[in-house]
Image (cartoon, rainbow, N blue to C red; front, side, top):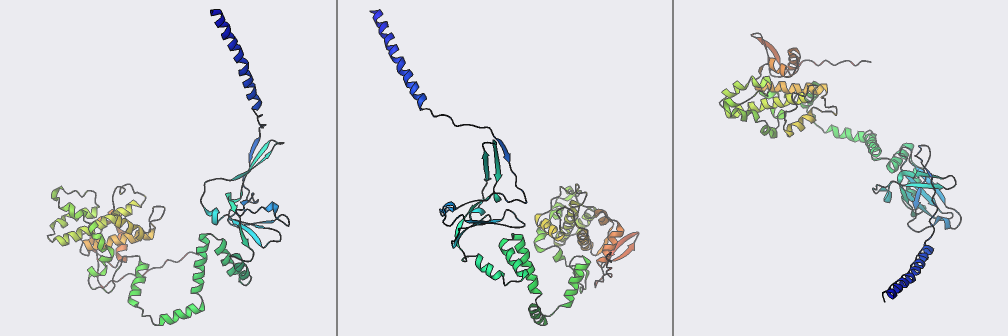
Length: 423
């Protein structure tokens, strides 16, 4: 009985094997042959300034240029002279009043994208694949436009009646960059100001204008002398230089560091301040009037910020690098003294900054100041500082081997010496 079972299992196994083989043979018949593979040499063709790369466009309207009646359409490409990527593609079907226009700078092409487009040309015989970038890295959307209708026709018709200057301005407005357009507008504004009609109207208006000659002379002197704001008609030294125009109303609250430091008494530390400020701390402590003490403290603090600002933009900026100037003053100083990209102050602005410091020293010393210590803080010789005091209208006197600068009124400035330009 066991023998018969083994025979039956063997027969079942033999009967199943051919079925599996037949099934596998069917699968092999259904497999399609693999496509031919070839090895190619890839060559990337870069753009050439004197050659126009391929231009790629599409017709969203469904127009097929190969099936158009009347032959192959006319293709024209317009390119900007100074900006090669600014292009226009015009497709004109033969005998049709409709043309298809696409640009690389407007419409769909103006939208931002991160893709890089290129065309691949495969040569199976030579086994090479050339990859060529397309014009402007843009795909032109060719929109249908009726010839003679649209933005181009009025411009073309009027261009014939324009002068060469007007044609240049019109071309700049259409094809130019934003920078070129702004330059053209400024030139047009200057020409309009120089027009005869404009000059006549200006002469008529100026007849009715009352000119303040004193204010004009004061302004001219301020610009040419490069000094802080002043009043030439002042009768007291306190009014000769306008303190409210040097330290503005909203800046006083940011200058109370010395005044608050004085409240600490003997524990107050003024080692970080310039020599000029430290030499006047003793006099500050003796002042009984708190209003006067606060005012003088703010003036000395302003002098400190000016000196530190000068040092921060000099060749030896490491000493004042850690000093913190209030933002309201830093912005004002940067604007007033024209800090350039090189992080250095121009010579004429350094002179203006020093003059502001010297005027404030006069206020702090009741217009009778010994300028030895301020010359040391400015890293200048006493002779150079003396010359600047004289430009401010001060007189120099000697008392007990020390030189003092005083400010007489009304202000009298030395004659300006204009430098002759070298030819």
